[in-house]
Length: 480
Image 1 (cartoon, helix red, strand yellow):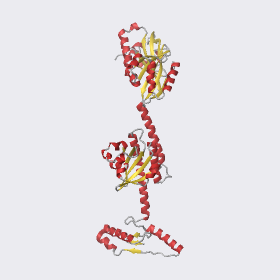
Image 2: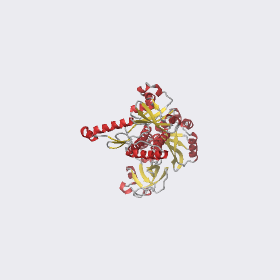
Image 3: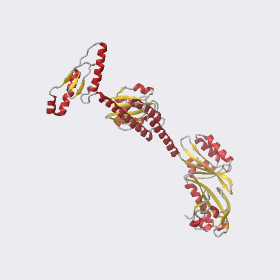
Image 4: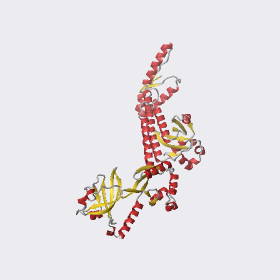
C-alpha cells in the first residue's frame, strides 16, 4: 500500500528516527540526510500532540503550508511521536487520495486490538470501532442511537465500582487537556486498561479519545504469580527452621498448606496392610480428632488417592465409577478435598487437605502443582525422620537379631547394678555362647550361621520375662 501522507517518527528530544517515502518527496531529503537530525530541520515551529496548521521547510529552503497531526506512542518506557503531514493545498491532491486516506483511517481504527471510542467535548459519541462494541457488550440499537447516556447505563451495570468510573469521566470532561490511564474491574472478573487522551484541532481540545484494552488474562496471571510467590515464601520460612523436630516440621507444613489452599483440615495418612492410619495432622480441631486413628479403606479418601497413584480432588472422586460404589465416602461430611500420594522408604502415604464446606472455586493446575511440592517436602521430612529412627535403633540394637547390642546391654547392666546396691538386692547375669558355631559357618556358610543366630535369639527371648534384657554381645556370644 502506498501512503500519500508524509509520516515522520521522532523521539522526545525532537530527533528524527525514521520517515516514509512520501515525507522524503515532500521535504526533498533522502533517508541518510534526514535521519538523526532535529525535527526543526523540516518544521521549524514547536509541535504538540494533536492536529494543527503550520509551515514546512523544503531542502531547497522554500517554505510551504502544512496540516499536521501528532500522535504520542510509548516504547520501552520512553515517549515517541509520530507526525502525519500533508500540504494544505488540497487541490494538489486528488479526490481519490482523500478517499484512500479515509479508508486507511477506518481500517486502522478497526485493525487495532483496543476498543476505541471518540466523543466530543460534551461526551456525545462521535465514532467507535467494532472492538469497542464487543468489549463492552453494548446493544447495537444503543450504539446506532449514539446516545451516550444510554450507553453509560449499560457500562455501569457491568462494573465493580461504577462510582469511581463516573468520577473519572467527570474529572476528565472538566479538564479537556488532561490525559489519564487507569485500570477498571468488572463484576464478572474482567479487567480492562483505560487510556484517555484529548483530541485536538489547531492545538485546542475538541473531544476525547478513549482506548480500552482487555488485560484479564494478564491480571489473572499476575494474581496467580503473587499467590505462587506468597505460598513458596511462606513454605520456605517453615522448612528452613532449625528449631523444629521432624514431627513438628511436618505439622507446620500441613498448617501452611491448609492456609494456602483455603482448606482447614490437613492430614498425612499411611497404608498399613488393609487399614489407613492417620499419622500426622495440622492443629485443626477435626484433624486432631483423627490423629492416630485407623480408617477402613472404603471410608477413606486416602485409600483412593493411594490407589489412583496421582493427585485427585473431590470432583475426581464424584466422577470416578469405582468411587461411586462407595457412597459413604463421596457423600460424607467433607465437601472439598485435594490430595496426592507419596512413597517414603517403601511405605505409601497420602497428603490430604479437606473441608466440610464446598470449595468456592475448582482446583486448578497451580493448586495441584503446589500440593505435589508440599508432598515432596513432606516426603523428605518423613525420610529424614525414618533415617533418624533407624540410626537411633542401630545405636542400641543388633541389626541381625534385633536384640539389644553390647552398648545397650552395658548401659542396662550399669543401671541394674546401681539399683541393686541402692535397694540391697540381687540380680542374675547369664553369659551364653554357642558351641561349635565355627563348624556351622564352615558347613552351612555365613547365611546358615546367621539363620542359627536369629533362631537362638528368638528362643532366648521366649525364655525370659518381659522386664529382662537379652543382648547379643558379638559373634555367637549372648548375655541375659
